[in-house]
Image (cartoon, rainbow, N blue to C red; front, side, top):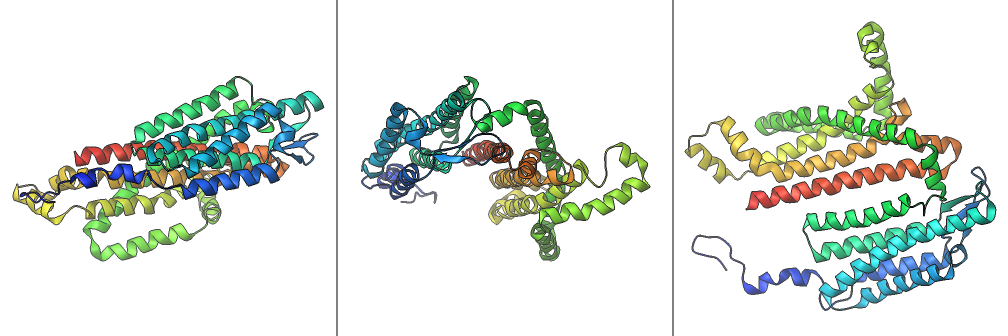
Length: 409
């Protein structure tokens, strides 16, 4: 119903909506599909792949042949538990049960892979390599999706979701620190490149940070210009869209010639490390890719300010500059943080390709692994980049939720 002031008031039936969102009285078809995929993968695909050395290809080994019977029985019981939770019709309690079982399934799957690698090392020696098989990835991904779905149904509080992620991630980190996963080929690749990993991770962060340092002010200025100059808007966004359609490798290649000539003409640039290859062209290219989401976010945020609010601000004697900083930008903060999240995740992924022109970063491990046909080395770089993007996404989602809550308070 509506109050005399025109504000919407939540009636009692609407206040109960959060409980209905959790799916009370219905089974969870998404979870049914996830459990079906997990069960099919566990029965028909290799849980791990065992190779006599790093060079030769591995042979798939089923779950029940790779680990102790007790671990197999526990994992099967947890998968059955997920299946039971998928057909339960008690929304909130079902989602709580699903979250607990999914987290246990994920941790047990990782522990089982570590045990399989240890048994292989004991039986075949330290040269043998144990890689993660397709069944492992499907079970781990399925349990992760089930956990995420259950948490999304239980709460929209990003802080609570971050705590759950931190607990699960901390448990995995404790497993790795205890040495339970040290015989996995992926862990061996990390151990062999521990120092290089730290430097390449830092390099990756520098590339993303350098691109953000250029894309945020330039993109914000372009977004403001598009907002203030409607006649320029179409041409401006057309150019930015055109940049997005150019493949990243092509932009890296196009920058090699001009930057090489510029550094040859100005030796000072060469002294500063600016040339046709390396970090400079990578940061320039990443900056170009970051302009569109930043400009679009700024324009959308500023354009979302209600005209009545602008009229009220002008009636209070605000000039255009005061309206921008004290009215439009505060109201646009949720949209601005969302656009920042998009550009950070995008640049984190695109920075992987920068290793092709000598810029380094986590992509260096991927391309080294491709050259050496070392799958686990490829995974070391790819999984690290994915984890970095997911961490940035989660943190900025939390910031966006906090800003939205503050704006609506």
